[in-house]
Image (cartoon, rainbow, N blue to C red; front, side):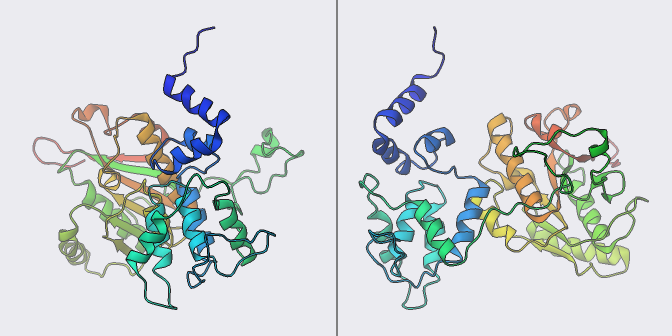
Length: 370
């Protein structure tokens, strides 16, 4: 039988089966490896969910713990109070791109003595990946649980009133059960749902950012937008392009409307990368629930991604959906059209297919916008 698997993949699988410590050593010293390799080595992938899980656990572990010897439990399984180094090494063992910064940020909260960058780097670089009994992330999570950490409670979904008749996580729905599903609710009547993923897109200079700004203000205010009813909520605008002109934009809007910008319309102007687990978890800490989140623009939010790659676009979409699920909000990305505007949004076709709503902004030769 012909084997179509790439040689490198076969080598990884064989290495894992014959010598797991060696495969583990390769993984933790090579950040950025694909999720298959991490899975074979028994490590969680660097996804927004896993990063959020780690950050959640670290909130229950005090960085003021004594340095210790790189363990979280003693040989009899009893928890140790001196677990600082063990925590740092457990994070290093993940091999994540964001691992060092996560461990550093946690360590910088030390109050028992001044934080030392040299001391941190010495501890970080002293990790031995091929140790016969390395400290693992599982030990970190177990230690956090002893401090009261709990993780994994799923948010309520639209099928929360349905009870499976067996142990499977899947349920077979007939017409009677489907009628029990929560009906769709609208944030912008008939256009954008109350939660999910949407887009406002158009070519450069078409005015899509001004339109998005105006929509955000109207939603925050609860005013109609071009005669369409809105449902008022907290609105957050992540401004990644034209930050310098934000003050003028706010002033122009207030003068044209004769009123102040709604107090529940807020902005984030710091750099933000949608596919960075660290950035995503950080922004989730400040975003309100049940609101609307604008990301202007999608390109600036994923500067290292290839929009034409199905893999990269998949990561972008999963991160945006994670942002939506984590806040029960509507996420609206502001995006460009491609060189051929007739073909719509720039990038891989999975973007348009994943949207719950979209508004296209155009500008004709006379400058008229539609």
